[in-house]
Amino acid sequence: QVQLVESGGGLVQPGGSLRLSCVASGSIFSMYHMGWYRQAPGKERELVASITTGDDTDYADSVKGRFTISRDNAKNTVYLQMNNLKREDTAVYYCNANRVVTIVKYVYWGQGTQVTVSS
Image (tube, rainbow, N blue to C red; front, side, top):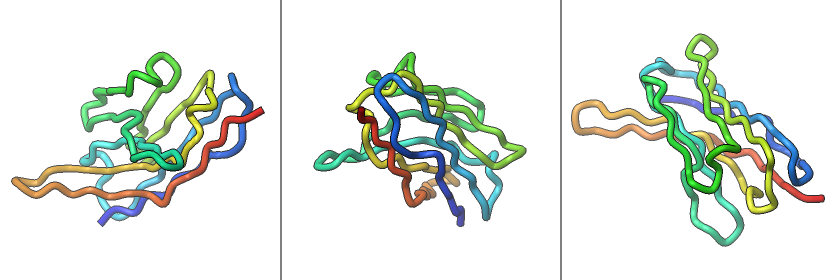
């Protein structure tokens, strides 16, 4: 079992920045691929950014060049640095941890943190 706790959300003006953090506990953090997802009202949850156990990263086209995902295995934490925020980035952001053991995929979610971009 993995417990994930997000923090760092809030209200920010367009063009501003926020850094989200997600602290994991309960298992060996370095063994999990990590991701940030978001869900806006009336929309499906979508992948924003991901980072593998080998530090390979991937981003949704809508956030490339503005968001950066990183991880600190010593602190059991994954970060999402969000710069040049736009109104369309408003959503609840969720942290995700996943790994595959033989044929079983383990997936865990945090409770979410609200990001609101508004003037």
